[in-house]
Length: 302
Image 1: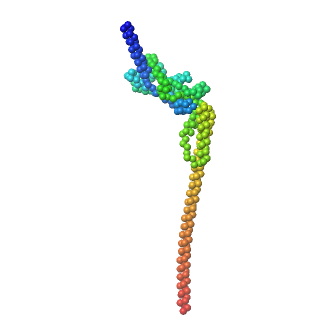
Image 2 (image 1 turned 180 degrees about the horizontal axis):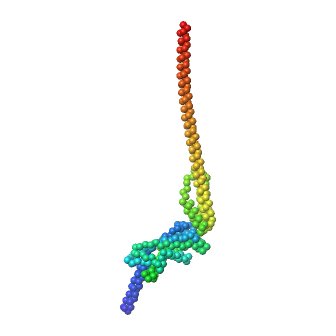
Image 3 (image 1 turned 30 degrees about the vertical axis):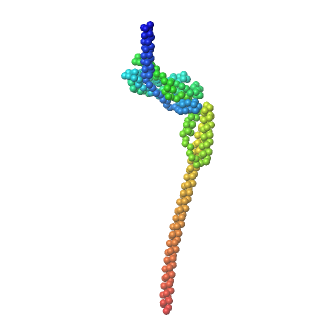
């Protein structure tokens, strides 16, 4: 009985040991991932989730950074044979940088970035009304090419957003929406500009309503109307500003001309008084000469 109990205990301990060794192998490499070249990344209020979105038939790019940093494999290299993503619509895409016959070797502490690219399906084949989940996997093999383990991480564990496919209208809507969100409204001096801005905000609200309903075609139309009205508002403000500057310049020119005229007037007045002074002097001299002549005539007659 004791031998049987001992045997059971030994088997359990061995099982635990093997499990720990397998766990160490599975965690032999750690990895992180990031999306690139997307149409939009952030909170999309149609899906009510944080998403990474690519327009249909565009190319999705995922970078996976793999690091060999587990102490159990200290001093040993690992051979990365597969780095890929599996989406829950059923497709799996792998990096072309590694495979079982041509793995990438990593020494302890060494990192390597693997690129996964794939063409995003058309919305006719992959609906844009749903968000898609996925897993990322890293496989490595031993020196003989046999698979040692496969490390699989969920999207959630990696802190990544859901994957979504945008239709052309949806992508256009989101692009214009982001553009409008980035425009800072002015303190409008033009009443026309302010009216156009208010109309644009109303169009934006209507566009958001259609977008949330999934009517992306109508949403795109209203977003385009909103952007056109905003352009009109800035044009009206610029036009008024230019006219106001022209008025100020004209007023300034008029003031300059008035002051120049006043200056010329005073200059003319000064010249006039100078001439009057000269005339008075000449008159006085003439009067004196006349008086002397009269005096001489009087003296001669006596």
